[in-house]
Image (cartoon, rainbow, N blue to C red):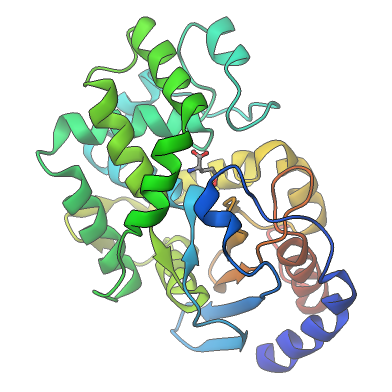
Length: 304
Ligand code: GLU
């Protein structure tokens, strides 16, 4: 498969959409990023990489980090984790309070904010230094010790994170947040601020594309079955309230973030990361979605 040529053709084909959508601005630091950027990187499970455009520019991966925190929590808690967070698509916005109230503080899945805040609480309870442990895990997945938090983005989000604070309070009220609210939110916001390039992100998702290889990174160990189940949750819950559409158009498990990044896996073939900050009305990168739709169409490789 000539992935390099396919990536170049795809880029030419999606250029007409380059000005569609708007970058997220509810986190002030994200509004400062030049919205007219695009990068993509494919990494096959045997380690070959194919990149195009700004694949080495770092960006805020935001909710994509929820895959890493879930992996870490599942590694230490095992199935006990599912007593505190579900694994059903939410059908509502990623930061909705209404469903959380109706369902008495048990978030639908680990990829909406409420679920990820519960996962952050699990990690904060388990480790003295969750920030350090989380970063070590992500660095090990990327094979890059230069990966870091972006303190400016984390500060900016903390200063305006009223809805996430409301979610944390509701979780606490229902007894599903055990630690100190401020402490857990500090970790959650810092987690979301991790910055990396498409090249790093494709590498970080490599182990999810290859569940047959041992998953041992930092001090996180997962079984093949756990890796497959994380992929299943990506498939059903990875794209806000557009997971069905992504499954329909692209057909790969993946996760998006409001920074405009999307990471996805084609099991036993490759992982792919794409980034472009302009988002559609559901919060997913316009060019990112188009690029992945064309990728699975051209290659005829998807999970279906
Ligand atoms: N840090 C963002 C928030 O909590 C993450 C949102 C996202 O990427 O979906 O609002």
